[in-house]
Length: 200
Image (tube, rainbow, N blue to C red; front, side, top):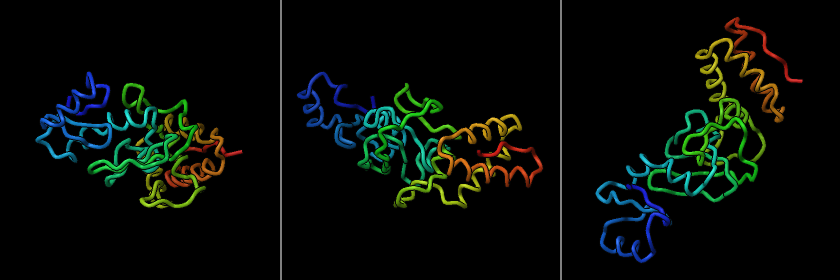
């Protein structure tokens, strides 16, 4: 099994017996592993998706981790109604406490229980300027965001860029959309690619 949750045991007494015998060890409250000879950091590094999906059902990986859908420097940022961080061996999970955290363009990562931000959502979320700065930083810096946009533009087809620009322009968060559109215009203009739709 490697990672186990309360419902994986036929009874609490069974779980207590297995824990007492050393057959399982706790990773965090409500999560255990039967891979007792492996460092917990290694178990988490391999199975963090299962853990996040179980503790934060329906969570969306976003913020600065929303592009690769993977932890960065020991941190994972998610959109979820829970607000309290979860500290695992070698990994900290940072939810945003947002009750309205799902979008139609979210990408399924694990059995419909864990999602990742689409490229458009990741861009919009990282361009958000409201709220206090967090430590560690939840969003990319302006320079990092510009670099991310440049990478997207240089690795996408013209059709993909046109679709991306149109989707950004349609966003209801017009402040973030305007910033991303400005960055896309700057990069595509420098490359002489095409004219993009304006934010209205």
